[in-house]
Amino acid sequence: MNRLYFGDNLKWLSDRKEFPDASVDLVYLDPPFNSNADYNVLFREPSGQVSQAQFHAFTDTWSWADAADTYHQFIDNCPNIAVVELMEALHSFLKHSPMMAYLAMMAPRLVELHRVLKATGSLYLHCDPIAVHYLRMLMDGIFSAENFRNEIIWKRTTAKTLMTRRLPSNHDLLLAYQKTDEAFWNASAIFTPYDPNDLDEKTDKKYSFRDPDGRRYTLGDLTNPNRNRPNLTYEFLGHYKVWRWTKERMQQAYKAGLVVQPSPGAVPRIKRYLDEREGKPLDDVWIDIPPLNSQAQERLGFPTQKPLALLERIIKASTKPGDVVLDPFCGCGTTIHAAQKLDRQWIGIDITYLAINLIKRRLKDAFGEEIDFEEKGQPTDFASAKRLAELDKFQFQHWALSLIGARPLREGDGKGADRGVDGLLYYYETERKDFPGRVREEPLPKSEPVHREKIIVQVKGGGVNRSDVATLLGDVENQKAAGGVLITLEKPSKQMRTEAADAGRYMSALWHDKDYPRIQILTVEGLLNATERIDAPPQINPFAMAAREAKQHEQAEML
Image 1: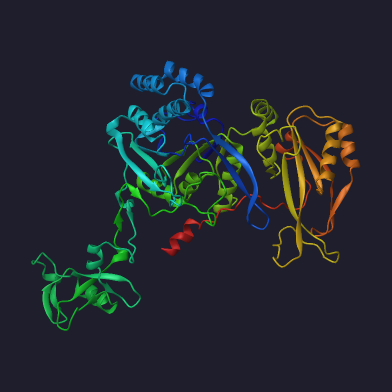
Image 2: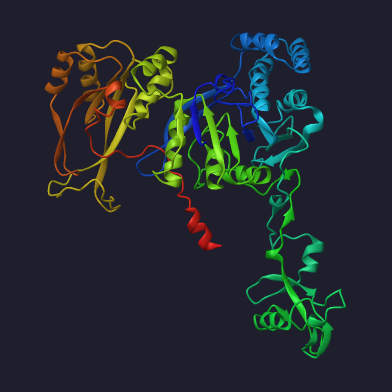
């Protein structure tokens, strides 16, 4: 079932073959908030530090010009008359504002998500205070108000700025709905462990005893309320009573230090430890899951990335192992990561190939190269690659760069998409002349005197000619790069191949004194069918690596 979709989530969700009715157990969505902000992806430098070079991921701004067609199609085709009337009322009030454009984008998607949700399913909509009241009305119309369960407050940051006209904002909101009263709910998952250093007065007083190692406990009754139990009636530590346990079990617990006499001659009591209780019941204000700061191990540099613990809590509360979790705005894949970790099936959709590529890398880093999932919407042959190039030249560019592991250079600001350098590859090199060379699999010692070299990449989605080779060679020289790669959709001419070969080769001392072509021409078709591959030293991974998750059998051994 595990599937990763590239493309517009509305188009995918509207496909009844891909997304049948009542096929999903849980939906979590964290859509853009209409915040009028630009969001950038941070790449990793070879040193492991976050790069200052950022790549524009998306602008969270909505305009009526982009949303008008979607709105009118929704009004004409939505079968839910109450929702249509609500949207028309909102339109009469909000006019052609960015907020109305945002709601026009959200409404058809929420209707489709309601359709694919099982009767036992739940949906969590992650939003902020700016749009929550409008989204709440929309959700009430789609799910019906009686299926609203909670408005959860998640404290995502600590206010640091003193506002002059209002209080600073430091929380997000999660609107929780269930499709019907039959929805699954795991009551045992809504507890958090007690913090022994931060207990309420009642719990602190009750669990006032401590073991030498600091574990808190209280003393419980060992006598049996059923007095007619001859097999449990015996003398223990001077007290003849009807006990809860057999004498053998009582003696074992006494030897283990779990049964004690509070004072000499007192009735034996059982130690009940605080850390063995279910924990403190959750309410609808979550302040115990901190946001990801710049030093967080799981931080991947993706905008709006949420903590793994937040998604794990939601998934545990509303699904069972094997259930299907859907995230239609899956971003850097936190929902998918959490679902995989918790043995749920998952479906992710994202409209940017940069996100899709990051998710694929994240899953392999966390769960191993052998992780299996189906990819949909990505080009698999020349025809589909050509369609992507015609539909969206920048997404084609990002996808083509991923074929050789290159990182995008910068956002769509006039550079790239057939105008200049589109991507970069980095590798390590040494200046030592006596260095004997290194095989690819060997790790690189931190003490070794190395520096990084770069290879620049250009992507061509249209026609190519000899001048493109000359341009690439000029860029290689101007940027002092070791080499250059031209990825082209169309097949290069024989003259282009000749000029690329005439550009010569460069040598790598670190990698067995091997030489590599200075200019390479690779076709999309050749990369797809594996008849062509880049010839270059091993690359430095530009993405932050996800922490490796323990395998299930390893986790079981630790329990």
